[in-house]
Image (cartoon, rainbow, N blue to C red; front, side, top):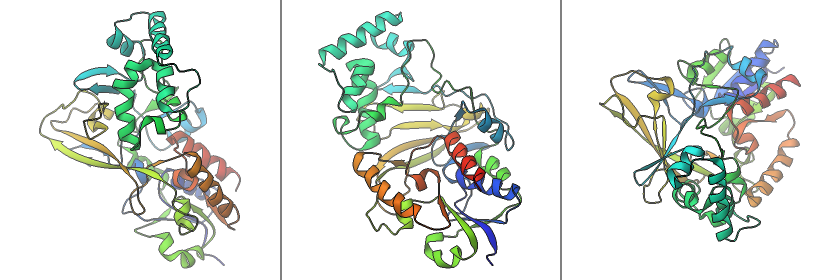
Amino acid sequence: MAQYDYLIVGAGLYGAVMARQMKDAGKKVLVVEKRDHIAGNIYTEQTEGINVHKYGAHIFHTNNVGVWEYVNRFADFNRFTNSPIANYKGEIYSLPFNMYTFNKMWGVVTPDEALHKIEEQKKAAGITEPKNLEEQAISLVGTDIYEKLVKGYTEKQWGRPCTELPAFIIKRLPVRMTYDNNYFNALFQGIPIGGYTQMVENMLRGIEVQMGVDYLADKEALRALADTVVYTGPIDAYFDYSLGALEYRSVRFETEVLDIPNFQGNAAVNYTDAETPYTRIIEHKWFEFGTQPKTVISKEYSSEWKVGDEPYYPVNDEKNNALYESYKALADAEDGVIFGGRLGSYKYYDMDVVIAEALKEASKR
């Protein structure tokens, strides 16, 4: 007889939701986590009384009423609205692309004027069917905005020219013909008061969690502990990279405590020129409307990923997606193991989708 019904590998959002649901269903659950903390990449820790997002900014947003009700069982949320700005060589522009952006760039005032300007630049560039990210961006927002606000940032983020990137990447970016700089425009959005770590702690309350346990280093012994394993680590690592390594982009953070109350006046500022080495600066206190006498900032540097680095963004191009499908076939044949979450599914998930996927999987058990 196994000691546990479920062994959850990873105490991130997917693992925590699965653990909570299984525990509430009367199952015996053990969570093992490789890191020395819970909450995965949404982990926050306090510095100078400020909840610092250690692995990059996470803003919760959803249109899913069920998911919103679920997370509110474990945290109260503030009313934070994500309204980042772009800094191009000292020129400040509103994001996402909206009428404030178009007005600053071209002096246009009405949506018709903005659309006319975009269409004019699209025609001048000779684009009919966009074949790559550069052409897709120009067809969406015109050449001027592409050159100043898309090209440099995107090439830093992905480490390759926009002409070599697939068009679909830019399609996620909102473009609005209104004076609305709310990035997500979701029905519900905000930041958990007290930070994400506290929210995940509440999810895992009453559940056995062991930190500093590398499941893959002792897979056979750990697998024997439970009837079912929920694995949220990298799918290719599970199979010892037998078919080759899936590609990711990684991120490096330089975090500083500054002895001033306000560094940039906004939670997120994107640096869109090619010359600035970092992609953006996060000022963490503004996620929770901080009044602390000091501030904490993090500069983000995008980097090529190699095995051993922290994987952040899956490179979902044709080659990598085909490789993932091969790994998925192996995973589907793996008896008694559920693969889930961002790394287990090789997908860039928003937090609400991670929770919805975990709830859906848990409901089948």
